[in-house]
Image (cartoon, rainbow, N blue to C red):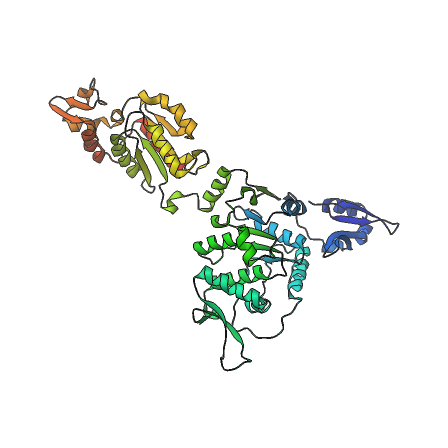
Amino acid sequence: MKAEWFIGLDNGKDVDGPLTLAQIDERIAKDESVEDKLFRQVREPGIGLRLSRVRYSDIPRFNVEFRPEIEALISSRQDKAVTVLSGSNNSGKSLVLKHLFASLGPKSCLLTCNRLSSIDVINSQTSNPDERRQLYDSFIHQHEAGHHHEDLNARQLDQLIRGLNDEKQDKLFEIAGQLLGSSVSLQKTDKNNRTSPWYVDIDGQSLKYSSSGTRLLFTLLGNLLDEYFPTVLIDEPELGLSPRIQGVLAHALYDAETRKRYFPHLKQVFVVTHSHLFLDRDVLSNNHIVEKAGDVVSSRPVQSIAELHQLQFGMLGNDLEHLFMPAAVVVVEGPCDTTYLARLFMLQVPSRRISIVVAHGDGGAPDKVHTLAEGFGDLHSSPYRARLFVILDAKHSTKKSSLIRQGVLDDRIQVWKHNGIEWYYPKKYVAAAFRCDEGELLGVDIGAERITVRTISMSKIELANAVAPKVTANDSLDPEIAEFIEKVKRATA
């Protein structure tokens, strides 16, 4: 834990420290009089760090350690306009945000998840110039008491709008109208009374009757437009907003020109999010992954496109089918592979959509993978990398090294020991197709372009069409086929 505690020395002038809470506990165990000589390092707005007396019984027992420390994180981001914090639930993201707020001081604005506001009319009464500072002081009182998981109540919407000057109100209505696709304005409740209260009109209806998402949007924008705050920290800006509005709002926050137009006073934005739409795709290092291991909460910047894609994929539920995309792609060499494997996937992996792509042509798999990569992007960084399978006949095994260089994982390349998937059909169904005994198939080249047994002759595709519909979920599969199906199951689980 951070060393921020001090013990006053008997000379009445100096202090011993900084010390961690564990070190303080150790000193007090040896000498109880130390309890009356404790100081804490605090940040005084406009002054900086100073020492303040504290009672031992009031020291919060907060055991989480931040890596890097909050002050170091602030220092590393002081010249960056955008910092996005992302990670799983209970990883410590909101905790990091609140400690950032405590350290950044009252000229920053914290918007927690507890920001839904009701609104009726806007009276012309004078707004309280100290209300922002009072909110910060209230937060610090709770924070230093160890109540780190309690959310701050944001200012009510009427307070927000009343606190903006005419120019900022106009910008609020302009940007809100653009995001909502609506006409937004300020109207009198009684048009014939000059002292009448005002209300926010959205397409002829008062904001008081609007959805919670609309009111959340106004709360967010109102605070962003408040020139009092050069720094805004937002916990889950996506709350209540449609994906389209999320994307446009993220652009407004992250794009320098748009921010200059609407929020020129805004120097820094810290965002905690579970939405892939609020990731910064232009500057990778603006995105930070927050993780918690025991009592340690760590944050680190995204280092590569692959890591960003993995972060996005996690936000989408690690499930490509949610995007109407296949759960896996299997590249095969011919239509017979498609016919048989499609039947097996339907029986063995019924809940997943597996796309089978035919390479068309002997050894054409690398060309087909190249075409797929043009659509998916670099396979080395694609979420599909672990879900892309390629099947090769034995005679084309030399293509494997080329596929690996393209980004296909080694264990996702299946090389059959025999040439042709026909060798892996259940023999009883092949025999039935030729109206013979299984023993009569010995010595027959099942992988030939045209197969003849006794007086019956058929092409490979005709054989595939005869065999595939007969296969059931209870049939024993060739070990090579069974192993491949299990590999696809695990990749799409």
